[in-house]
View (cartoon, rainbow, N blue to C red):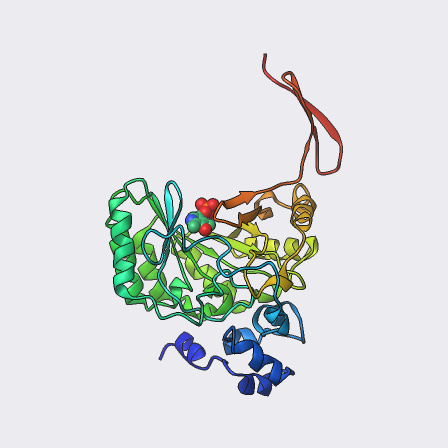
Length: 346
Ligand SMILES: *Cc1c(COP(=O)(O)O)cnc(C)c1O
């Protein structure tokens, strides 16, 4: 058995097991996991340093998940924007194809908390239907594989899916959204990279939320992917008590660049039922971007995006640097709050 499968097979899913490793309230964990299942692998568990630290909060069930509030199961209306099961077509030229319902761990703030750990595994025939939809829709030039985690599929299955999508002439780029480089980095093997590199241009977007998640193993995983010629990006979710400050995000993003991973999006947490305790004020995201821009490499500055409730898609918001604008000129402030004027062409 490959190392990564061994880690997965030894994942912790019950309060009893968890209590052997961490100081948790068993009753509380039981109550929460009867509604929202738990899964945490021994690799990620080993990175937790203390109670309620950034990694604990992402992976260990909290009673807060059961509180009622404004959050709903499918805030992004993915189900309504799904012409065939497991495919979301929200934007004109690209689709999201869900190819796996499995993950290396269950993040407590998951956007697809309604599905993960509950629903049946995604069937081959659903994936085939999705691929057929892409084949029929010539406007689709960008296919994002997501889930669950696509990289929890076996190399062979992935090879088959990627081959089918790559054979469609109008598909220009393929993207894989995965948390595996962070949550189970030993899954990134030479063999996997041999499969992925056959389907270029292929991009991998990963998901790190805190610099404590960056280890020798993640460095090795990112190096293998980069050596396979895959452009690497990262998506971070802004989470209360996990990464809710400019310092934490700056440190994370600088570390990511050292692994050749380009920060892409910083997301406002979605209005997902069971995750309300992770939400921050939108003002914080804007402040964080302002604390980065100009102060550190522009490469380390992501877009701050709110995925609009109701299926409006990602809307990026940024600090306002425009003080005044007329037909003749624009007056701007820079990151040091100094003012500058740029004259418009006649
Ligand atoms: C995020 C997302 C995409 C990709 O958006 P980009 O801004 O192009 O990265 C596509 N489809 C859906 C449904 C998404 O949620």
